Length: 357
Ligand SMILES: NC(=O)C1=CN([C@@H]2O[C@H](COP(=O)(O)OP(=O)(O)OC[C@H]3O[C@@H](n4cnc5c(N)ncnc54)[C@H](OP(=O)(O)O)[C@@H]3O)[C@@H](O)[C@H]2O)C=CC1
Ligand SMILES: C[C@H]1O[C@H](OP(=O)(O)OP(=O)(O)OC[C@H]2O[C@@H](n3cnc4c(=O)[nH]c(N)nc43)[C@H](O)[C@@H]2O)[C@@H](O)[C@@H](O)C1=O
Image (tube, rainbow, N blue to C red):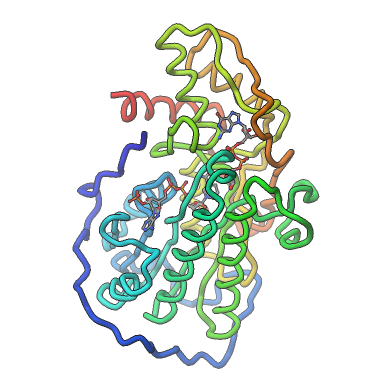
């Protein structure tokens, strides 16, 4: 059950022209690689040209829709957007035709195959294939068609299962991954490395942000394939409505997770495009963690379900803990604003108004 972003809420929804491309595209010649690790090395500001064309890939999803809301609220006027059915980003030639026709100046890559612990564990082939295809096509076309800056989004699952806590960026590739999502994680690690390789060899301004577990309006509320927060919100709501006595929650309740409201992530994305042009990926978290048991109690309270919780320990817990160290982004000047309880209230209001109608 997913409410789609309304295409008529944003400008510039024109269809791409059906241009043909030769298979051998020119490689841009950039002899001086930039491997800056800090502030923007690009003298022109993202904020200085509100008419620059921005392609937000995945604009109907949780993250993409929040980014679109944010950049429209900042006064940007020239967004180019495509639904999955209008442009399948796994298809290389279609992606090249789109970039050739549209020539976006900025690209924000928020399109991906995404899901919670059960979906990742059940469909490993789709998670590795689709994510590798989407990111490879979009990153490569962005470089070849002269995009000024690209932002790629990974996930906190790129880090080892037993990484030091809070997890610094330097933990990447230091130990084995969490098995329930290693296929998705490997694709995301490849995305980070592709951005780095294109920066080193071609001086392409590609940056990567690693968000923690996200939630908010336009989340996926599917009963099995979603993440824990929307899954529990829906389950408690349906239990309240049907006057059920108990709700089943997966695992033991002991794993710790860090949650960030998607509006904070959207702020961070815009902040990074304006302020950061480094080789290294940057963590984007709230800095606060809760156990799944604490989260379940909080969602139960916000929804107003009065029955009991029953723990299904046959379901996997996943990573025991994944609190990220987001101090590098904080030092650059970014701080998240939304408290978990406030974010849950806001998300439940959105759910009632948009999903249960
Ligand atoms: N949700 C979370 O907790 C976290 C998410 N992230 C990252 O944020 C990014 C966005 O995730 P999120 O918003 O949650 O995901 P959603 O599932 O909500 O949205 C994914 C978007 O990708 C689009 N999409 C999927 N496949 C294709 C395709 N083949 N061609 C074109 N478009 C496609 C979908 O389009 P359509 O709607 O048209 O089907 C949808 O708009 C991902 O990179 C994810 O890894 C990182 C950490 C946590
Ligand atoms: C963002 C992140 O998301 C995923 O990793 P995850 O953090 O393990 O995500 P999750 O939200 O699905 O689960 C968190 C915890 O919550 C427990 N849990 C309880 N009850 C439900 C429940 O009903 N649904 C779900 N999904 N989980 C439940 C569940 O057992 C687990 O202990 C990866 O896809 C990964 O690729 C990734 O990037």
